[in-house]
Image (cartoon, rainbow, N blue to C red; front, side, top):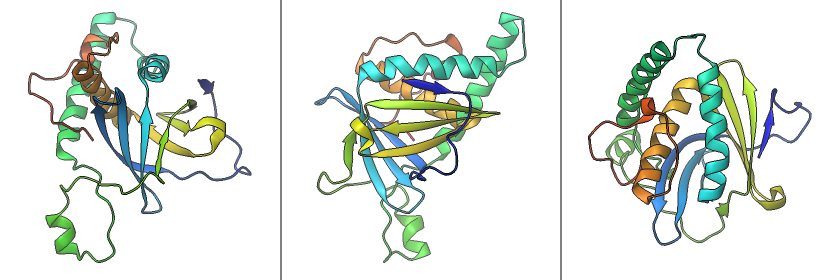
Length: 198
C-alpha cells in the first residue's frame, strides 16, 4: 500500500483507466470481485482480498474526512450523512457494467443496459496485490496492480464516485461478514441491497 501526494510523471507508460465498476462478493472465493469497463471499451475482472481491503479503506475514509473544513464533529457527521445519501441515490440510478458488443444498435444497447458482464476464460482476470493512492484536489486516483505489475489499471475517484464506491464496499463487507470499522454516516439505508453494486 503506497500513498502519494501527486500523480506519477507523464513520461511513464499510460495505464488503462477504469470507467465504471460493478462490485460483487464471491462467497466461494471469499473475495470481492470487480468487473470493470475500461476506457478502451474492454472489460476486465479483478479480485481483492479482505486483507488488502482492510489496509486501504481507512486511507480513503481519512482523505474524505480531510476534505471537510469543519471543526465541529456533529456538523461533520451531518454533512457526511447528507452527502452519502445523495451518493447512494445516484448509485441506485446507475446500471451494471455491460460487456461491449459492436453488433448492438443504440436501441439494443438501451434494452440490454441491465445485462451483467460475463467474461469467458481467465485471460482478463487477476488478483489485486497492491494499490497506490495518488491525491489531487477533490479526487483520489488509485493505481491497482497485480504482483510485479504484470497487470495494472487506474481508477480515478472524484469525491462523489468515492462516496458511491465506499457505500458499495460497506454493503459488500456487511454481506460477507468481513469485520470492518465503518463510520456511522456511511451506513446504508434500510433497503435490502442488490446482489451486485455499481
